[in-house]
Amino acid sequence: MNDISELMKQAKEMQERFQKAQQDQLKQVINGESGAGLVKVSVNGRHEVLSVHLDPSLMQEDKEVVEDLIAAAFNDAARKLEDKKQEAFGAMTGGINLPQGFKLPF
Image (tube, rainbow, N blue to C red; front, side, top):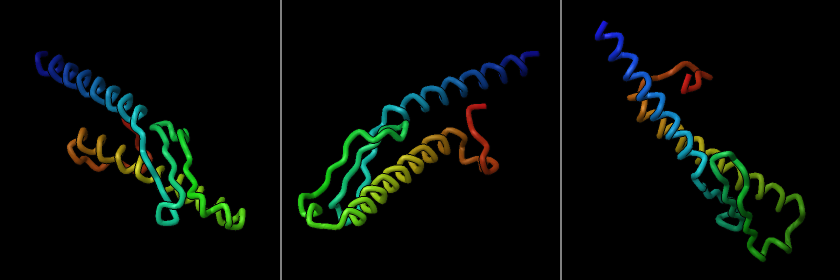
């Protein structure tokens, strides 16, 4: 019976660590850029855009070029955010490879 209670205690601790990590992820601010820094965006852990910076030289460009650079900068930030998330949760699971699409905490 002692093994089961210890296992339950460990599961609860792991769940608490995951919840804290999730909260920490939401508070992160990640910066993405494109066009060699001509476009910069900052997003939070919810993938909400906090700021967009456009280099003044872009005002001479076609609208489509600027739109593409903004999208690329956001995608750069989103990739960085996902990489940080994988890094944080990967360390927590001890490098266990979970099936594709498997989300933690349960």
